[in-house]
Amino acid sequence: MTVKIYVPRDSAALALGAEKVAQAFHAEIAARGLDAVIIRNGSRGLHWLEPMVEVATPEGRIAYGPVKASDVAGLLDAGLMAGADHPLCHGRTKAIPFLKNQTRLTFARCGVIDPLSLEDYRAHAGLAGLEKAVKLDPAAIVREVTESGLRGRGGAGFPTGIKWNTVAQAQADQKYIVCNADEGDSGTFADRMIMEGDPFVLIEGMAIAGLAVGATRGYIYTRSEYPNAILIMREAIEIARSAGVLGPSVLGSGKAFDMEVRVGAGAYVCGEETALLNSLEGKRGVVRAKPPLPALQGFLGRPTVVNNVISLASVPVILDRGAAFYKDFGMGRSRGTIPIQIAGNVKYGGLYETAFGLSLGEIVLHIAGGAATGRPVKAVQVGGPLGAYFPTDLFDTLFDYEAFAAKDGLIGHAGITVFDDTADMLAQAKFAFEFCAVESCGKCTPCRIGSTRGAEVIDKILQGVEVEKNMALIKDLCNTMKFGSLCALGGFTPYPVMSAITHFPEDFIPAPLREAAE
Image (cartoon, rainbow, N blue to C red; front, side):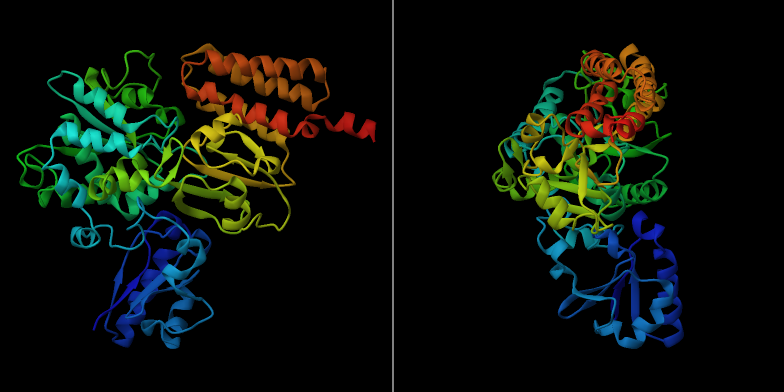
């Protein structure tokens, strides 16, 4: 029987040499005349083990990693084809603790299937949600998504069902589904992993959304920095169209929905939905004033659903298993699962999908294994470059939208970046201002001017110039940006700055004053 060997083509694995590993396997299999086939899957999200090679055995898939091209011959000599033991062997993939303890709903197939095999997708419960959706009344689809408690996984956590219902109720000759795949937060990679590892789930989710609101056209807006994801998504769309999953009659239902990928230049502000829509229309990526809401006047002035990749990719399991099944996971108003992206100074970085409700400390110290340097953890930034810095004193905070908001933080796209005790939080606060200054679209004064002035004032604090006066100025400036900015770029920049000041005041004592005090 032909043995299946899985070598990921996910960007994280490719960056660590997966292409050379695949080539080495092809060469060795041909030279030895082995009955084996190489399948290029997505990543399971265990990034410290990439490239992680798996072999299918009667006992299940066995994992080896991290594998280099130079390891391939030795692995085959040791009996990899039969899942034999080796220093790089981690046993059954499903039994690896980092993976075993997850609740994988949205990412159930990621790293498991061949991303471009519709047959493989179907064999793992793919299209089950869409098959049910085509038989339902549009209002029933919206109701199911609403009752599931699904909230936007890209930022503010707005209820997905409410947004869909607004578009469904709007009157227009044309409506659109726009997938915000402009994943710009540092330390985040969930959107990319889905597009590269399970593209059909995103296609299925968008098709369901289209059926629900009466939209016949969809767009995936992503960034030019994701060439691999763009390539895979475009090929998957062609496969889906050829199979009748997309087109004038979705799964033979007589209802139309088709879609395409559009590529942006990578401006951070285009992750904001109205700037994204401007860019999608061929205009400069500048934030629009709201109202009107995109749900009523979005792409080309038509009613538009704008959802994040993970929001849309979570829809198929909701339609397949039911709203009650999905809602059973999580806590409070945060229902279902969340793909936490662990990055920074950690031993075990990667994607960890779990129900809402784990404590921040459990995620950082137990799941991520603490700092890779072995030094104490000092701060954790949750929610990307505009997220608040949480000290270890707040490690009891539960991973939940409202729990984070109560501590002046935000979950955002659920990326967490860990820093050990060598981190300089004054420098991190300055970086927040600098980041905002570079990425601002320039439309509103608080963001455009405030970010630049903020970096300048922090420089004065660093030099020990009128520290008390300038600290008060920074706080006043943050207040202006938070409440006066047109969008979240300027509005959220105060989160990292103010959290650094609040939780790490000792870092804001300039070196000259610190030395004088000593």
